[in-house]
Length: 187
Image (tube, rainbow, N blue to C red; front, side, top):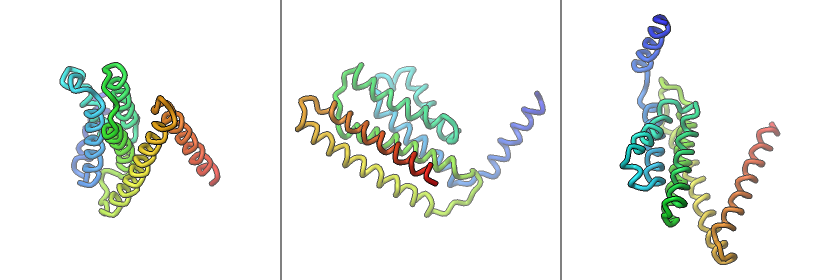
């Protein structure tokens, strides 16, 4: 027992002495994106209650464990906050808020993936995160354009615009997953 604790303390000490700035900044950016997404997703009165501290802890988890389930927990918490805010609390769906929460949740996921791939003691060239973030920005821009187009078409085609948008969005998501699965298995 004492040996295990001693080994863990030695591992933490080694981490602190060898860690470089780029991986630490990536992990920090992951938590900041999660914190902003959760902050926009939940109503203010819940953020200022005791639940706010738990939400803050959930947003910090992806920085500590980007390879584990922490990023998925943070993204799921943001989604749950959006659903609770718009259904239980009856807050109207605003396009800017929808796009901001979705973008920040995707950014959390993307930055956690990059942080998980980068060792904590690597000297990272600035081109690596810049390329990663430019690809992420391209995906976010394409998704925002698609959301606006789908909501516009759905608003003209049906009395309930979000139902058609949800159905089309789910079809696009399933198609994207199917295409990615096919590409992975093709190799």
